[in-house]
Structures are given as C-alpha cells and as structure tokens.
Image (cartoon, rainbow, N blue to C red; front, side):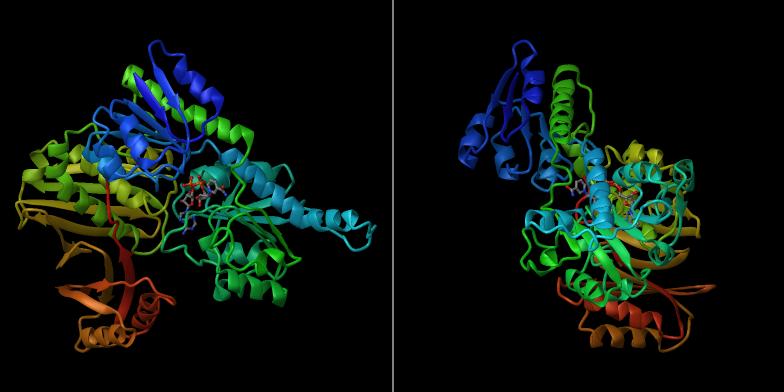
Length: 535
Ligand code: NAD
C-alpha cells in the first residue's frame, strides 16, 4: 500500500500509517503539481491539509488512488465532484478542533471582560494603571450564542461554569438538545437585545453574510461585547467599527476577518478590540487530533474497507451515479427550496416518490439528497449525501419516506414536505429527460420552472397587476429575469422567478425582495439559492 502525505502532518499520524506492515508512507510537503502527479501514479491514498490543491487534473493521473484524507474540516482545496466521479472517497476530520476553538472563544471573552491585553501592554510600558482597568464579571451576565453546533455547544458547556445565563439562536437545532444543555433558544432579535456577551459559531453562507450590519448593531443591547471565532464574513467590519465608535459595542474579540490578513488594520488596532490572527484552532492538541483522525480514517478504509467521516459518495458505480444525478439534484433542490422559505425549527423531512421512481432502488440516495439539501446551507464542514442522513439524525430531524406507484401527471415525481415549528412547507418536481430537474408545484399550486441558480418565490393574492409590479421592482433594482412562471390555486397565486444574481455590493436582489414584500397583494416572498453541486 502506498500513501502520499503532501502537507505537514503530525508525527503521530504518520506513525499510525507506518505501523501497518508493508505500507509505504511518502511524507513530504512542498511538492510541485507535476511532482505530486508523478508520485500519485501508483499511490492508494493521499493525505493533505489545506495547502495542496487536489484538482481534477491531478486525480486523472492517480490511477490507483482510492481515498483522499483532508486533515481539517473544509474541503475547498479538493475537487470533491471529480473525486466522486472517479470513485475516490474523500474524508475529513470534522469537529477535531471544536474544543480548541471553544476555548479560544472563552479566552477572548475573558480578555474582553478584564482587558487583559491592554493591562499587559501598560505593564510592558512600565505603567501601573490599577484604576484604568476596572473590569466586569461574567457571573450573572447573559451570554448569547449564535449557532449551537459543535463549537457553540462546547462554549455553552464552559460558560455555565462561569455562572452565566446562556441563550442561543439556532433555528435548525432540536429544542431538546438545547434544553438538555440548559440553553434557552430565542429569536435572533431577542438574543441580540438581551446578551451582554455575544459569541458567533455559525457558518458563513449567503444568508449569514454581514449578519452584523448597521441595522443589526442598532438592535443589540448597548455595551455589548462581541466575539467572533467563526468566519469574518459574518460581520460587516465597517459597521462594527462604527458601532464601537458610537459606544453601542463596548468591545470585540476577533479571531477571523473579512480579508485575512486584514486589508484595513484599523479595526484590529482599535483599543476596544482584542484581535488574534485566525488561531482559534491552532493548538498542539487540535493539530494532533485532526491529523490522527484523518490518518485513522484513511487506514481504516484501505485496511478494512470501513468508511468514516466521508464527504462524498463514490461507493455507487460512476455510471449509475451519472444516471441518478438529475434526480439527486432535483431532490436536493426541492429540499433547499422548502428550507429557505423562512427560518423555522425543522422536525422532519417527508419524501414521497410517485410513479416509476417509486419502484427504483434510487430512493435510498434521494432520501440522503433531501437531508443534504436541508442541512448543507446550515452546517459547516461538508454535508454530503454520504453523511447527511447521520447528520439529520444527530440533529433530531426525522426522514419519513413513502412511495406510491401511481403516476401523477408525470412518469415520476418527487414530493418534499418539510415539517417545521412554523407548519408544513411543500414542493414537488420531476426531471425532464434527459437531465433537466423542474419544479412542478409549490404548496400544492402547480407552477413549472427550471431548478437552477437563484430563484425568487412569491405568494400573492390572485388579482391583476401583481406580476407587473414584481417585474417593475426587479427591473428598478437591475435584477435580470431569466424565467417567470405563475401558478394559480384556490388559496392564491405563486410566482417563481429565476433571476441572474450578480456578486455585487450592495446586493440589489435582497433590496428588491424587501420592496416586493411591501406590495400590498404580496403575502410572502423568499429568495432561494440552489446549490451548485451535490455529490
Ligand atoms: P456546525 O456545523 O457544527 O454548527 C453550526 C451551527 O450553526 C449549526 O447548529 C447550525 O444549525 C447553525 N446555524 C446555521 N445557520 C444559522 C443561522 N442563520 N442562525 C443561527 N444558527 C445557524 O459548525 P462548527 O464546527 O460548530 O463551526 C462553527 C463555525 O466555526 C463555522 O463558521 C466554522 O467555519 C468556524 N470555525 C472556525 C475555526 C477557527 O479557526 N477560527 C475553526 C473551526 C471552525
């Protein structure tokens, strides 16, 4: 067995692989792409951190390769779809650094409460400024946690020992999980209004980008101390600077920045800011654990065929995967639609397969695709159809699958119903041969539209002029319409608009939707961003 380790991994991880009889472990960082391609020609396994780019081209030359291990969480440096296409398993080490990040968040929280860095700076300057550093206790204060996932939960556990009251906002975690930790789940506005300390542990997505803007800072409890060890994009740094200058935010502890290193050091230099250079996960233990976890996953697969921490799905034959691809895309897209129709706590995903599809073996994968569609925009660390069912189970989300051999208007049809704290949401679709997933109904109203890119879904009273108004608003905001579909039901109309979304600031689509929501005949309007890939 030959394993290539292309980035620096702890010695313990290499030892674990070398301990296997007959295994050759070639560990060396800094190889050129050509060198790596040559070395991979007869390799069975590849281990990387974030430096090595595992591209489709590189994988082409790796004819024997069966597994890529990413020592870390994000898999941005790996072309996962290309690996799946070649039957190569990709594994990572989610959660191995959670404790380190949680401890760093606590370190920043204490640093802010007691002004440790500033006091130390004064001491180093030979100044004994006892009166200047009047701190505040954590005891009895309210800690707001945004995102109660792996890291958020570890922070909650630790903050309890300081005697803090802990509230959290996470629309996607089961109520029971929060309750079992003594954490009260509240709305985002409630958490922001009540928290003395606020710590961010949610992923950066199109929805959470600049979650902390001028408007959000206007709603926080004055004197807030905010900590970000998640992702820089969550905070509009210019708005944070303004909030600190205005005194709304008393202090900020930042490990992550919109640009790293920062393009503008102004924020990091403010006296109210304690900044660290994205080191929350940089501990000996985390590096060791991440390396060991990944090496063990690679070893277990190559030695025993056991799959752990997989982020893709190569077990299925590439030709079969290719055939199912449009159905996988359809199911994931329908699930993404119902999930993005406003935040709510998800209890269950109901799937119903109609017609020929009901008799196929594909439905096993489609259940997983639905879970991936729901969880991918919510969780960090690579949700895929391999691990999505397990991730749903962990979060207390049930997947209920039923089938009917009756064909409803189409040869095959997938119906996805999301059961949430806010009621049920429902969308249906089919595949127009050869491979074009189509939406065919929303909330039981027949409306047909292509499933791709960014969509705007509008529910409105069925009366003249609404479509014209929506079109005018989009035009005014320079949002290009690619397709406009309309459906009429007993209880009102549904419009589905496929739009060209451009990556520009400010996001005019968000503004357009706000304006559309204000049209009197419009009851609700949502932006849905569909995933680009899904394996
Ligand atoms: P996780 O996927 O386990 O948890 C994320 C949680 O956020 C989930 O419970 C999810 O339901 C919740 N969430 C999603 N969207 C939300 C929203 N709009 N509002 C409120 N909650 C929402 O992830 P994790 O492993 O705990 O990581 C948390 C963050 O920390 C991620 O952003 C990750 O990238 C970051 N991270 C940073 C470092 C570092 O070095 N600073 C290291 C590891 C992870």
